Image (cartoon, rainbow, N blue to C red):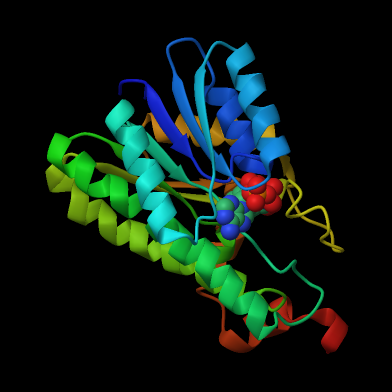
Length: 252
Ligand SMILES: NC(=O)c1ccc[n+]([C@@H]2O[C@H](COP(=O)([O-])OP(=O)(O)OC[C@H]3O[C@@H](n4cnc5c(N)ncnc54)[C@H](OP(=O)(O)O)[C@@H]3O)[C@@H](O)[C@H]2O)c1
């Protein structure tokens, strides 16, 4: 597989997105990075430029459909996008109670609507070129509705299933689709989790695994494998046992 030359990453100002931007940065690579927090995104851009990459930045809320389309198409006209990583995401925190209606709506607007706003404008351009790669940031949380974060899990399930549908829809057009399902990664999103996170991994290590998976255009990049096996096993256990194992212990 050829190395992508123009890579778009949303949520590049922090955590996994920042680690991916830094990892992909190299001479001959154009990175188009999105985020909202100007200072943090600018710092990631500078680090990428110092590694020799050409970098463009845009401070756009992924829920702003019109601004997303305008920015993404402008970047694609400058240089055809080879890989778009729809990474921006949010959660209400996990394990500390129910998500409020406001949080539920925001989680779906960013994690689902934001992904659509990111990939759809570029999808038709990739189809017309018969080239390109779409990567969607889902989660191992997409395989089960966990008690502490049902809306977050549901949002990640929605984009995983959407991406899996797109794989078959876009394959005849020579456009690849990968769905990324990480376990616990040490980022600002997880640092407020008050519970032990099994097999917690650094964002840098996760970015390497993701890059390797995307390089071989894997349909699903799920890791760490042992945690992946555990969440898949929840599907085959009896429902009462799954509920008991995954119940929010503070409330029972
Ligand atoms: N950390 C984990 O354990 C884990 C596991 C599985 C999947 N994931 C997924 O990985 C992705 C990255 O998460 P992370 O752990 O790196 O968290 P993070 O450090 O909190 O980063 C989230 C990123 O998303 C951006 N973002 C959030 N809301 C946005 C909005 N409305 N518009 C534009 N950008 C927005 C943030 O940008 P600004 O701060 O600039 O707004 C930030 O760059 C998310 O989709 C997350 O669900 C994370």
